[in-house]
Amino acid sequence: MDIRQATVDDLLGMQNANLLNLPENYTFKYYLYHALTWPELSYVAVDPRGRVVGYILAKMEEEPSEEPCGHVTSISVLRPYRRLGLANKLMRQAQEAMVAHYNAAKITLHVRKSNRAAISLYRDTLGFEVHLMEKGYYADGEDAYGMRYLFQRPT
Ligand code: ACO
Image 1 (cartoon, protein in one colour):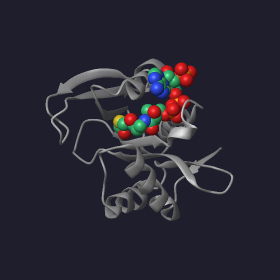
Image 2: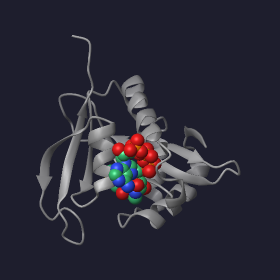
Image 3: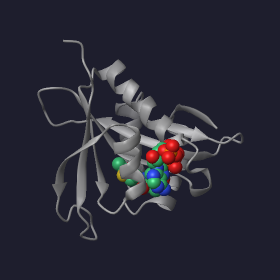
Image 4: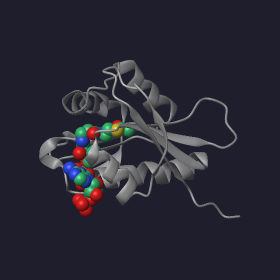
């Protein structure tokens, strides 16, 4: 499986994977906004025929803050391609790009409290920590964990 930076041509494939994998869906315009504003931060995993089998849609926080902060809007991998390390690689690519291009000090994301696979990926594999709990964050009322990863920076 090839992992590469997402282009505008990948956005429909990303949206399709998102619709298959998650209840949190976005307009095509929102995908386009990510790709045009932070072209370095979103990645796709593609099969040998070029079909998108996994993606990470990422951005920089737009609210003014002390330090640049990356944010993972959405990540998912099609079911037959899970547990192959693709999400881990997609996350690491986006993390590297956030530091290289935007000097990110940290990354944040939201995840459903019941999403054991994703929480394990973030916490156990990537070293994220839970920093807050947002009650009723999702449309169906489920709570979210706010998770974050702080980059080690030279002092
Ligand atoms: N159960 C427990 N731990 C898991 C699981 C699982 N089902 N899947 C992944 N992990 C953890 C493990 O620690 C794993 O390491 P290991 O395989 O060496 O044990 C580690 O994550 C890395 O796994 P990957 O193979 O890189 O993960 P994968 O490519 O399968 O993708 C993902 C994980 C994205 C959570 C996938 O299951 C998925 O698409 N789920 C549905 C969509 C989703 O929940 N997306 C996240 C929503 S939150 C957000 O988008 C910000």
